Image 1: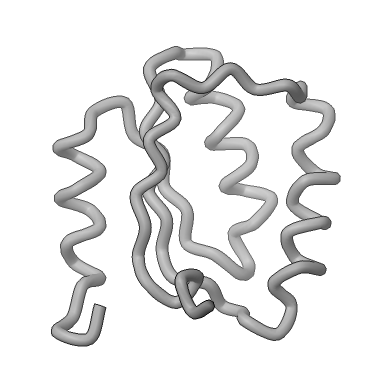
Image 2 (image 1 turned 180 degrees about the vertical axis):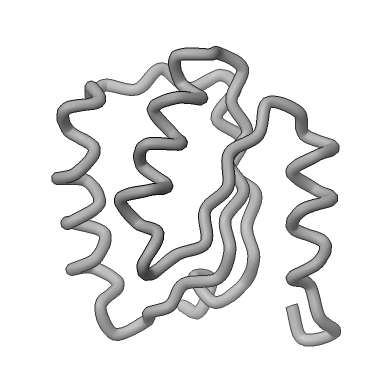
Length: 91
């Protein structure tokens, strides 16, 4: 499995998280442990449809900034355009 090495779109517009903003640092720490040998991870674009989830995703992006380039969007087209800069013939 090498999926973590390719830019990825995460469509979270219909998601209902079962965690709170207080849990984000723990989630980031868990991700760091799981992907320790794979760092840095390929860029990720997260698309959300709520101001609250936008804020939570931006906070999470700050927690993981050292090992994954994660950007948050409220429009799919903007996320696709941002990810396009990372695609190569190998992606």
